[in-house]
Image: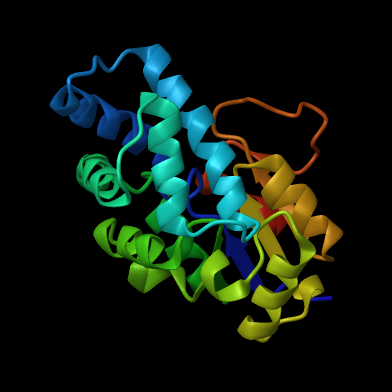
Length: 226
């Protein structure tokens, strides 16, 4: 089946979420009397994933996962309003640090020039992810955005990919998934009938993955070879 569309992940693929989160913590933690050590940054990421998973599974609201993250990370309680206000401080610093990867805009432009449609499938919240694309200058290039909020399913579940393809108007076999998380963006996509390539920016593997890029700049050559 002919390739018609490229479905891209957002965080870690088009936008440098990892650096933005670290910068956000370095700016925010001192405002609440904490030192932004490397250990604290690693712990924040671990706590984040635990509660985001509960939100993606539909067990808690997006606001509640933020509150639970704070309770775990800070080891304190507080009312919902107090926790929301504290978390808003982090969000301000995090959003100020949003940056697109330097290969993102060129890759999207190149795909369009090659006659391929592009779209984004993200496990993030739709509202925040749309702001992220706007703030990083990618909104006009990326195409439609599919998120947990409107799909009712998250990667790696097949429903996330199948619903995205259906709303986009393409069969799964006509779509290539590109993303930095091998389990979510590659294995999940293939299980749903899409082809997939792993964007392994940091060389973290898995080593046995045959369809692997280290930069979006390699995508055009990969598609040409394919």
